[in-house]
Amino acid sequence: MTVAELVRVLGPMAGYVPPTTGLRGLDVTCTGVTHDSRRAARGTVFVGLRGFKADGAVFAPAAIASGAAAIVASEPPSNDVDVPWFVVEDARLALALLAAEFYGHPSARMKVVGITGTNGKTTTSYLVNAMFDAAGVTTGLMGTVTYRIGSRAVDATRTTPEAPDLQAMMREMVDAGCGACVMEVSSHALALRRADGIRFAAGVFTNLTRDHLDFHAGMDDYFAAKRRLFELLPADAPAAINIDDPRGASLVEICDRPVTYGINKTAVVSPGRLSFSLDGLTFDIRSPRGLVRVESRLVGKPNVYNILAAVATASELDVPIGAIEEGLRRLTGVPGRFEVVSSADDDVTVVVDYAHTDDALRNLLETARPMAARRLITVFGAGGDRDRMKRPLMGMVAARLSDVVVITSDNPRSEDPKQIIEEVKRGADPETKQRGAEVLSIVDRREAIVRAVQVAGAGDVLLIAGKGHEKYQEVAGRTMPFDDIEVAREALETRRLKSGAG
Image (cartoon, one colour):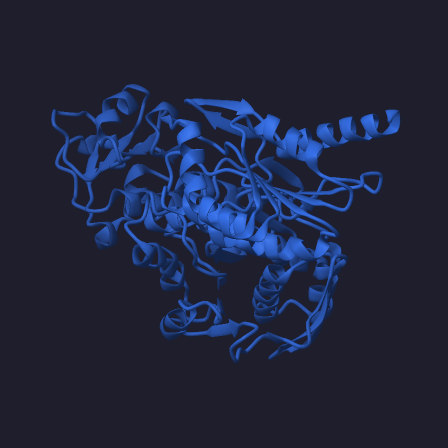
């Protein structure tokens, strides 16, 4: 298509103002849409986004020099330019609409399930994906852990990509024969309009607890971002909503087709008698489409909610009950989510989990406690350059529910890791005085994990929380290889060798 054909999609939605300069370039064939001047090439449309530090429009000259055929920005050019320059009220919305148009609106050719919430997004997405797979539907997956396009998978760089990358991947999914796409939709992506231009077949709300308040102005602002997913849903799209969450009821009010799920409150999709064990979950689910028998390797109450969300969504999208049950049986685990890394040869149980908020950490500890014949040991830290208020809250939860706590570095980024640890300890110290839990501070994360494995006794459960599937650590502006799972397994191997020698 030409630039003129592409920009018709802007219209009044993005506050489009017809260009007054460079009109002769409108008949140029468009070869792509980008917001990164370094990716501009002959025929691309460059969209200058206003960022937190600078307005992307300042990079327009670089994009033009690389061959950009047109510029879209919230401000007019400061100097004469020889390509069309389109002024819009909302450049982020414009980017999303242009990307969807350029790639031929691939979301309209698949059942796209959008999942948002603080905790549980990744596991719920894996569950829904497994159900589609069991039904014989080739399915794409986008989220915190991986991007999967048909049979090809790559490590994820962010939970929800920027609009051009997102639409490009969806186009690849359609071309690969995918009939569905399951994606995590982060609050950042919703606030920054990356998901605009997607036709969702269903939306899922898992829960809302404290997180990302370094980005959002407060919990109401955080929830408003999550709510946008449901404002984007077509009228005929089901919305699976956790009615046990205090914010769930307000989402029900704005959705045309709400499907509530929950354990404590009356819900459309609800469990029968729950059976918890360290081997998994077994229970029945009552749904409008029939009774679902759950036999899952996933453990703990949080995963009951994730399973309810997935069943509510898949059943409303006409996935057969048999395929839903088969999908539940097939999914044996999710990378970095309560991932047991010890073996039958070890006398301790070591679990790696992504829990990085106080609520997620509490759920993790409450799930792990019944597994511990003796003590519960927790290794965790808090990320730098992020919400500082959750640090003492995490320390308080860890010291309240653990017998031994090892506070260490997570991704300190530009902050002093020692200072972060001190802020975490402020919450742990009062609990320590009251309960007598042992608290250690070890800045180096590798050393902390090794030390925890060393001090663990037979029958102890050791939790390593915060990074889960991540295979890197961000320290002082550098990103270095680091894998909790790999480090833990090395420490366990050393422990076994010493035990054998003894």
